[in-house]
Image (cartoon, rainbow, N blue to C red; front, side, top):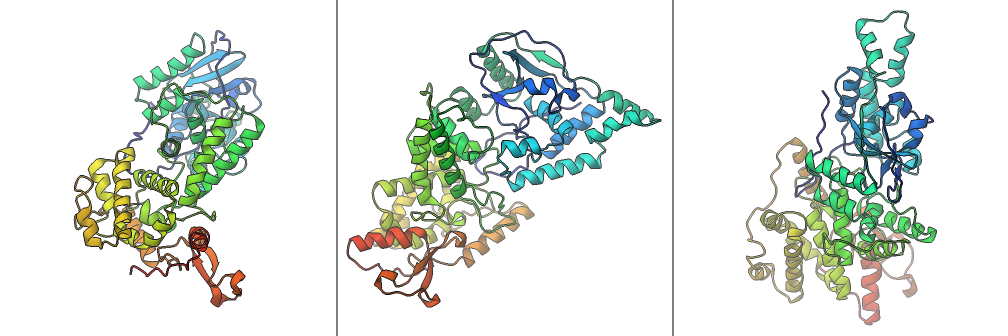
Length: 535
C-alpha cells in the first residue's frame, strides 16, 4: 500500500531536502465565482496525457500549495505501487464551470501526469511554466527520478508496449492489467467556499497543515502574500499576480527577480560542497516560502499573522511591497552600488552548514534601521571588528538561537546584540568592555558556542566554512571580508583626481564602500578614514 505523509516543516535551521518539482503539470485557476456542477467518475491514467480531454479540463485551485514536496523515492514508490496493483488513496475533486479541480491528492495526480508525459520537472510542460529557467537542482532531481524509474522498469511507454508482446509472463500480464485500472475519486458537493473548507479540513485531519501555509491560503490575495510568492520563485512558475494590470505584473516580476538574485543565488550552492553560499539559504527548501513571507512582513512592518488583510486588486500594492523589500535587500547583498555584500559565512550560516533564518531576518531588520538612521557609514567604520566579534568568542549568534529559539523569537535579541556591539565600538570600547556591557538577558557569553558536527556531511560543511572565513580577501577600504563574486573594482586614486586605470591603481572593495562610503566623506569634504585591519 502506498501512503505518503507530509514532512515536518518546523525547525531552527534549514536542511536541504531534494524534491521533485511537479508544480507545472496541473494548471491553476481561481475557484471563486465558479458555478458548481455535479461530478462523477474515475480517472484513467491515459486521460492525463497532454491533449486528452480530461487533462485539458484539470485544474488546481489557487489555494493549493505548490506541488514540490515529494522526494524521488516518493514519486517512484507511487508509480511502483500503481503498477503492482496496490491500493492508491482516492483523489478528491470538485467540478465547476467545465473544469475539474483537485481538492486533495494534487501530488498523487501530478505524479501520474509526470509519468504518462515523461515530465518530472524538466520536460516541455515544466520548461514553459518556468520560462525556460529551471534551477539546476530541479533538473538534477528530474534526472534522478527518470533514471530510477527506468532502472526499475517503470517507464509508462515501456509498460504500454507489454500488450503488443506475442506472449507475456504472469507478472507482465498483471502489470498490463494494473496500469489500465482507474484512479479512484471522490467528489465534493457544494460551492467554492465548501471546496476551500474541504481542503483545509482534509489537511488538518490527516497531517496538520503548516500554520504558514494555512495563513497564506486564507490571506492569499493580500499584497504581502503575493509578494512573498513572487520573490521566492524569482517571478517564475505560476503567476499568482498574473491577473493584475500589465504594468504592475512587469514591476512585480522585475523586483522579484532582483530580490531573488541578491539573496537566493547561487541557488544550488550547498555548504558541504561550496564556499560561496546564499544569504537567505536555498529557496527551494520547505522553509523557503516562510522565510520570504517573514522577510516581507519585517520590511513592511506588517505584524506576522495579521488577519483580514485588504486584497490587492490591480497589483499596485504588491509592486510597492516588493519595491520596499528591494530597497532594503539591495543593501544586504548583491551587486548594486548600495550593497554591503555581507559575507554569508559570517552572518547567515552556522559553523556546521545550517542556514539560520533568524540571523538573516535580524540582520535585514538591523540594516533597515541603519538606513533609517543614516548610520551605514558608522557601520562601515566598525564593520570589520564587529564581524570578528560575531564569529569569535563562542559564536554569539548561535548562543542567542540556542537560548531563544529560531525564526522571529530570536530577531530582537540578535538585533539588540548587533547594536550593542556597534555602539560600543563607536564609543571606543574594547572587546572586553563590550562583552561586559552586554546584558545577560540577551546572551551569556561562553568560551564555545559553536555547533558540533554530527556527521561527515556537517564536518565537510564546517571545514569549508572555516576555510572560507580564513581565506576570504578583505575589502581594501573597510577591511572586512569580501564575497569576491560581488566585489567592486575600485580606483585607489579616483579618475577625477588624475588616477589611471593600471593594475597598481586598482583594488577590490564592497560596492557600498566604493560608492556610498566614499560619497559620504566627499560630501563632508573629509578624507576617507584609514581603517586598520582587525587581524
